[in-house]
Image (cartoon, one colour):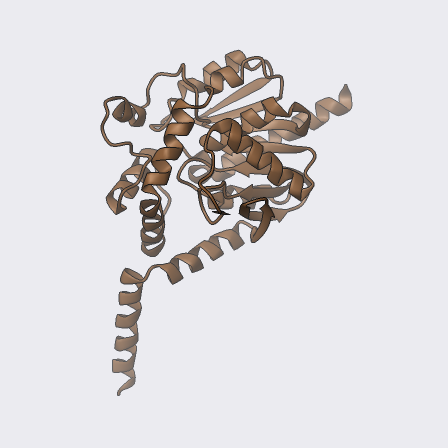
Length: 312
């Protein structure tokens, strides 16, 4: 076999693997993304939950909680900018990502908060900065409500659960009893959800796209159950946050089609120590779409708070 024919055959095999066996390529891309974010993968157990988490950086502890149908890898890009200032810890929440559970978890926000607190106890985290994207911001607020002494400040990235906010385009679909775009049934649904989440979608390699879509498809029924528990069996965020004195930086994309950015003003009104940053030309996941700006805003916010404490 000539060298040229050998090369052609190798390229053909690689192309077939790229198209029909995405897992190895997806895992490799994900590992590179974590390394770029200066994060490493590790595991810890609490009771029946075998947690997968990402950890990296140095400094004061910053716990980051991902959103619905997501995982800790949503923080890889922003972690690159944060790791010189904070020890970043981001778990895959039970029922999502690579965290394993023996029994279906309780997805109510109060129960998810208790699960995260048990994980924090296992890691010896007595006090930390606490951030969350979408569902993760909802959970983070409930943790601050349950244990205000453990949360130095909240970083809420388009948090879910603001019942008073008008419907976003995505939630209008749900209200009209069409298919819930957050519950992925196939690759088409996954691509459609990405379109909802971003103004300028980041590049996602084909194998990683297919891998994530297939993972979400396998969990369709479970994620519908999770959505119902969060949406209908949990206290609204604007109720949980009412009067919450924990300092908070609320960051929201002005072009968010998943959760209406009007929620930011509602939370600012009910949280006495909240500040709001609205980002132009940004969608539902600002830490992915605008990672540097979002990280700099949080670093500046915490630096200012530290200076104020020294002066007081």
